[in-house]
Length: 104
Image 1: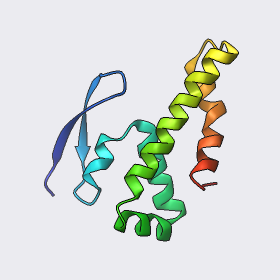
Image 2: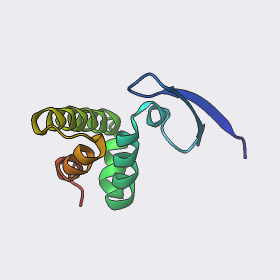
Image 3: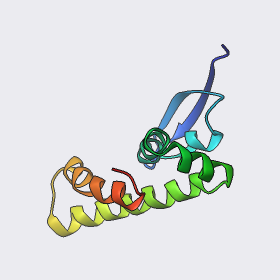
Image 4: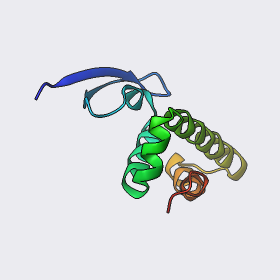
């Protein structure tokens, strides 16, 4: 099996090296951590919907849209509620994200 590595950047411009898999869409590696988690959950929980969206090329834009909105909601939650730790807001907003993309 051929190993392939790709350099990616986080939202904060930190660089990472990821091992890639040829069976996964190239755009997957450009998504945020949150987007990659949603991708995996959709693939596991709703394989038919996942395949349909993947074939119609709407999967990645759909995930990116919701992952970005989750990030904005999380940041808003931090500011409005004065949370000291980001992980608190991430946990509080995670269920809203899961519901928004139609997962359990």
